[in-house]
Image (cartoon, rainbow, N blue to C red; front, side):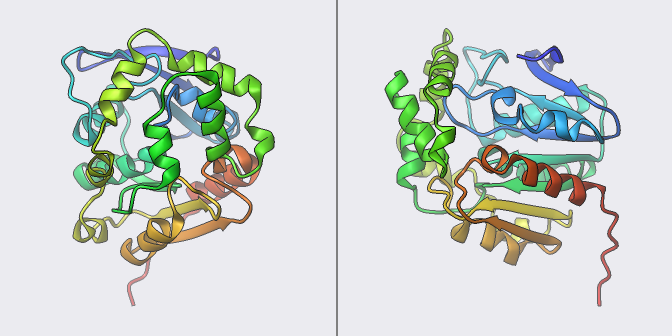
Length: 278
């Protein structure tokens, strides 16, 4: 972990997060992979965004180094409430949100539930609409700990296999076997997994009412969350949205296209646009 690693009591949950930079607040919400942490997801992006923004990157309840209460029921409502409580605990409002995969679905949930807290939104390979469970996502949510299985997952996440290194597989495997972590992960995404995926979706009528400016970023070759059934559909539903698709890129846009991803986010978040209804 980096030197900006902190802990905060969020309504009784000891929450681990990273904080860096100055400027308008940006909340980074990680995805749902085994052994994931905010730092693992965003380590290449935090330094870039910190040049212009006040960045917060928490480990959601049940993930990383945040507390995993024994009696908690994991799911979209629990994660959404934890993130809303985190935003309030750090004393921020009008927070821009960048959400990865599961984190993208949760960004929309927050905007729907507490629009007063949210500025602009970036959805990266985001869930949040119904789609048929992919082979890639099924393998991610059905992970059983081993270095070999973790290596296979890295190969699913990345289009360019140079990013699926043995060293990273070893690191992510070790992160996935922290005491109690696999038990929590298995509970989150137990069968029926299609049902768990469907629960992340907001009804289309509610998505249409989200008036925030939204940028979708997706890898064309994402075999975990297919852009045709998510980002393209979001473009139809969200009234103030735009879409950027990278070719030769999988589910890991923020890693495979880190410089381009950071610049897209930076330009979008700093841009002052006035929406004119004609």
